Structures are given as structure tokens and as C-alpha cells.
Image (tube, rainbow, N blue to C red; front, side, top):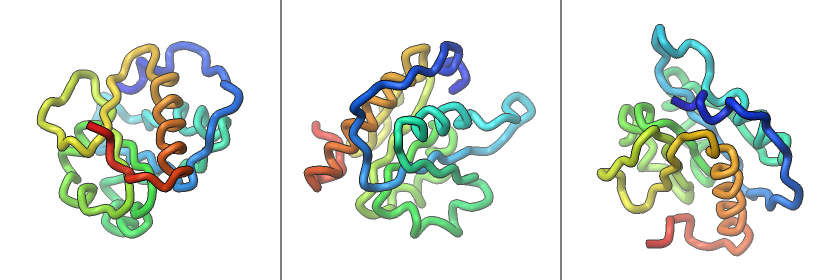
Length: 145
């Protein structure tokens, strides 16, 4: 799912705002079909743009690190979100961005959603700039309707 977005070369873009809050990439359950971490290149891409990025294996570490997710920007795929939605929806002063192959109509309105495709890196970087603007102005971390 997420690997399609990394097929082209990752290119740095200048003048990106940085978030005050860290970004957490939640790695969901593994299967025989997806053994590698889908976030590795995204982690590198955002790190190279200066963002503070951390990866958490949701299946092992999420309950232990739930307090650390407060006041952060959380990214996960739709499968991980559906499995851990109760925990993720309890985070305080955080944003939650769901990556998916198709539009998910049943998501709460206060979540962000990014559809994965070949232009996903640019969409994610634009989204991180938007998150940084929310941080900079200390605005409400919920998406605008």
C-alpha cells in the first residue's frame, strides 16, 4: 500500500516549516506480504527536511508509549487505525493522519486522511507544513471543516 508512493526519487524541498511537536509513524501488524516497514523511506524523507520523526511498532509499543503520543502528530495506515482506534482517539493535543489506498468515509471529522499514490510524498510534506503552521500559531489541532 504505502510502497507505491516511494517508487520515484525523493527530492528535498527548501523552506519547509518544522513542527514543534514530533511526528510519530505507527507501524501496524506485519503479514507475510508486508514484512518490511512501509515508513522507512518516509522517515528518511521527513527527517531530511528537518522534522523530528519517530517510529513506533503499534503492536508491541503503543500501549507503553501512549503518553508520548500526546502533543504530537501521528501517522498510521487504515488497518493500524482500525485496530488501535480507541487508544489513538484518546490522545491529547495531537493530530491523527490516516494513510489509505481509498477514501474512508467513516472516519471521524477531526482526522486527516491522505490517499496513497505516486504523489504521496509531496502531499505528506504539504500536510506537514500545514501541521507546522497549526503548531506555530498554536491553533486547534483539528482539521477545519
